[in-house]
Image (cartoon, rainbow, N blue to C red; front, side, top):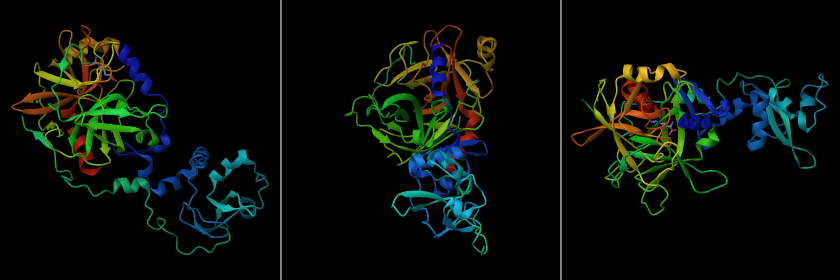
Length: 408
Ligand code: ARG
């Protein structure tokens, strides 16, 4: 149960304001990557108004009596709210009432004493020339994200294969799994990034991981992410790894934190990885095959035993693929969901992945290729008898993965 507990902690309070939902994706972009138009649309609710003040995002707003454009694309003039709506007596506003402005179109101006005051973009006294369809070159973020030109192969390094805790595992020899990604987070109180999940490099700009790893992330949470590639000892600064920031996280829209169905997400790296001997993508399968009873490997920096400590150096363990019906009879009577076709289970006596391995790859080794079949997702405890490790079945997710690789 410990691992389930670990998961719950990650689910605290989802931050809606930062999410864009597009088809079957939920996209959160790091703060600096969001368009100015997105901030404009945030003016609509009092909640976001408060957020905006908090982050001081009013720079660049028109000054008093200067022309402004509302979020609906109408022309106006920036004035005090009482000037614009003299008939409404409610606007004897005090500082605590500023949320009211959020219902209108905001702008800022300087008071005679030089302090900054908020006003409204008032359209009542401005003749409306033809309306702007979209204010100048600002495109709404939804349109922006949806209208991306997607090409079949925007990234150069992809590997496809045509063919299928680390508890009681062993240390990996350095750089033998060049696709391994360590997902780290920097916190405000410690500048030493902490490992919380794993992932796999699937081309030079994308890391495949589990949705539960990034559940509830806001735009500013995305900025705290660091992905280590080519890493072995993640707490050794002389390790020769390459560190990447993340510009965007996309999780599956149908990810259900309760049942962990569709536990899949992709991170877009700020700077593409330099592909070579130490860093290179894992292969993804092209055919949907069940891989029953095959020996597969899982690698990660997760706990060495249930409730145990986490190693600094990358480890691996071999496990065997179970059938979904066998896995379902182990689990279905005691879990909130079910073992579904988009999950794949693997286990072996006293061998398993464990907390901290989440998001990392379960892969098959074939004639020198490593082919990813699963994403570490969940289990009850670690390496318990009758509690196999459960993984997101990659073969069932290939369309989703390819779409994101090609577009985002
Ligand atoms: N949810 C865990 C994590 O956050 C992974 C659990 C895998 N558990 C297992 N028994 N295979 O790291």
